[in-house]
Image 1 (spheres, rainbow over the protein chains, first blue to last red):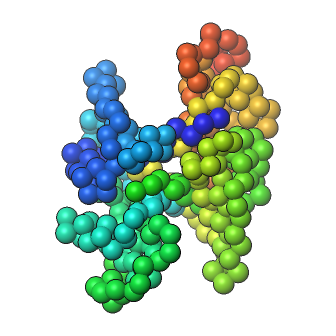
Image 2: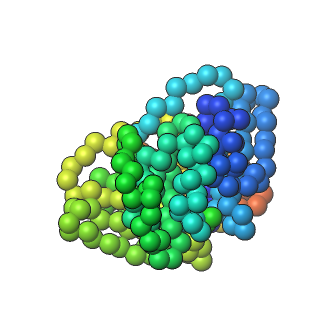
Length: 139
Length: 139
């Protein structure tokens, strides 16, 4: 067996593509607009890791997605967790769990999918503004 | 950035390991029992694909997980979708969406995480009992 993807539903495709691609850095691996089914699928993957995809499903007719706790989060390793969080913060994305420890942060997608960011290798030395930043909401 | 895992919470760890490993075929990549936090993490991946992990989180104290629709499913490609579904069915797992088309099936984990199974390559020729099997519940 082979892992293909984790599927997440998105209510606003443009906003989600901005979040996952422009801000988070995933690459668009293919988009399928299915007129008969009235939905669009977009497959995204980290650069150089084409087999680790997420599938965005956007149903054209409005729907309420809600959230449960059986699915927890998507986790990505990043080169510089402070630079990543600064970039996300500059884009108006709340850093729900700031990387106070130089190691781990959590943000949420526009549809409240929890995203864990982990520093590659050793934790970074503690640094402001992160070390003094409190949690915001849940993740 | 690099994909690390999709995390899912599980209420019954033994039952979930039976589902994901014994029945579905994922391999155990590491288990961490965290006494202080009263939780256990188990990392699973398909054979030969160690970077495509799921993380099972089991909190030792009882919790209600519920389910939302923002997270959709985990998708895996399989060599023989009929053989996989037969094995799952023999283990008492409901095939919510049988592979009537020789191509796609859906089952649910013990905590209602939706799992998509896709036939590798071309769809298999239509075959009983699958082609006559109706859907069961949602997925």
